[in-house]
Length: 312
Image (cartoon, rainbow, N blue to C red; front, side, top):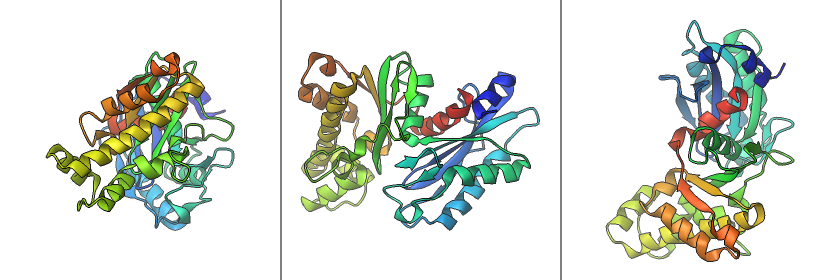
């Protein structure tokens, strides 16, 4: 029986899923209830980053999974584990080939989560695996800013840039599970959207222009204080994301795009800037009508979406 099938057999008010989200800078887990709420006290995280290895990934998974599962109540029914990861991924084999973690390429993430959870529980915990952008899209469509939309894209603009599609109310994983990799679309002949618009890329560009800050938070502070270069870096990011979204909407005919991620909050008007760039860049009336909105779920979206892989 699949994890989704298991979920369907129990009482919904007792069902919980283990959710694991792996990104370029952190790995976290929590328990999520059938109504999409994260169980208090079960969420924890460990750092990943470019130096992450198979061994460090396993240790981090063991720690966050054990912490989450310790929060199971006596009446809770664990229906499975949902895992979302920065990609690319190999959905068939459960492995990852992350852009930002070269030493972790080929790591069996699905197997590691299943083994860790099963060891804690003393029984097999069925595990479902997807791209993290797809998890975000699923969460936003379920409980967030794209509810009710026929065709939507949900993205993050953070350390990286990525997303996922929901079409006809259903998550669209693509042939290998990687649909929605907006960050690896080219912004110029030589640079991808992620290489131009992500937080680290925007900071790096600003520094080439003479700005002396070091982090996205510094960029936000200085732009708000009137620093011309910091503001230009933010506008450059938003323009790049908006143009990429115009292309995506031209191809897929999107109704709405939800944007989350830490760098999307670098200025109060970042979403407005992206919307303006999309509208100005799109070539057709239907793609110009695509709405850009802020994520409705904040930083819990990827975890809720990972849980939705088994709860929904």
